[in-house]
Length: 262
Image (cartoon, rainbow, N blue to C red; front, side, top):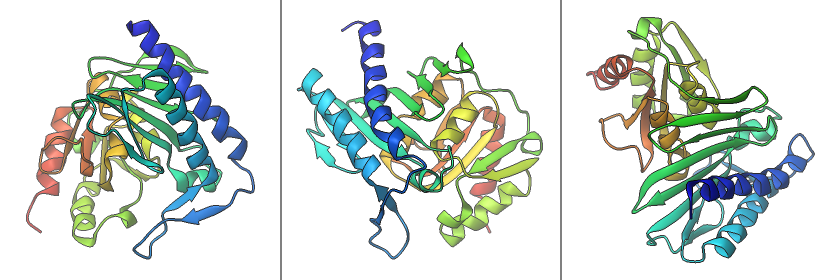
């Protein structure tokens, strides 16, 4: 399969998922809480329908590939090529009618992400990356994505989905970084990482993430020239506590504060 064929297939996945999801957005949809720990972890009919549509297309086109989805589990997870799907990343924004959500589509080979897309069906935007480059396509045109330089945290804009999602010790570590940055804002989920890749944000700090939350975003951030690691400077592929930055100087400064003794 050529690169052009591959890009066309991922676009087709985005199209079928987007057509499934859009009628549910800002509608009177029912919401189920799938949390087992007393919190609120919402899932909607839109999540499950979009994942089922993408799975059917993958299975029909690449029957030898594996698929891991947030809502419908794993099929052939040990295959050489595995698709990792999060039909609606940012479900809480989705059910509130806010556009800060997207569909995450990652292709992994031997467990490492080699291509990622974040598709926002409502704004009709695509953010894609393969680790060596990243691109935007949408109402604002078609262009390469590139992070911006930022010399220090004091000059940085930082995002996180919400400090309330963090465990208390991690929240205290996060606050040390927050006190240093120029501006801190909450919300965004996957969209925040794409804004970092596009050069609008300088650093992101998150915790409690799953592989399907990050695998599509790693090739986008790295393809735009950014860096994405765990808090202990490990590979981010399994999620957990994540730091993403557009400039390695900001990344190093944030890591030092996150890992400083309390």
